[in-house]
Image (cartoon, rainbow, N blue to C red):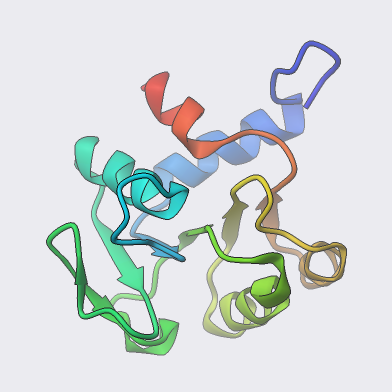
Length: 140
């Protein structure tokens, strides 16, 4: 983010690449329409993006079948939204890298310093601590 609260040039480039590089996945989706995990999923659906949902306990959210792990997805996504507690952020970075997922978008409050450091070491494109995907979807 720059001083005016807008995405930096680097973030803007990652945002554009993120939206162009499907398929997409969401981890941390919720059945509760008031939670951001649900709002993020609905934004993908409202904009007709082909979206997969990874959730350890749910079978379906907002009409989308859930899988228990990223490995179950076919095809493996190129871009992934993360709306989970920061305590599991590192897990998602490591799984994404292992499976070839190139871009991660941590929603505000979902990342950890450890996860961001690891993502940088692995060469992943990451958005965190800044632009919210819901705001960016409204621009499309």
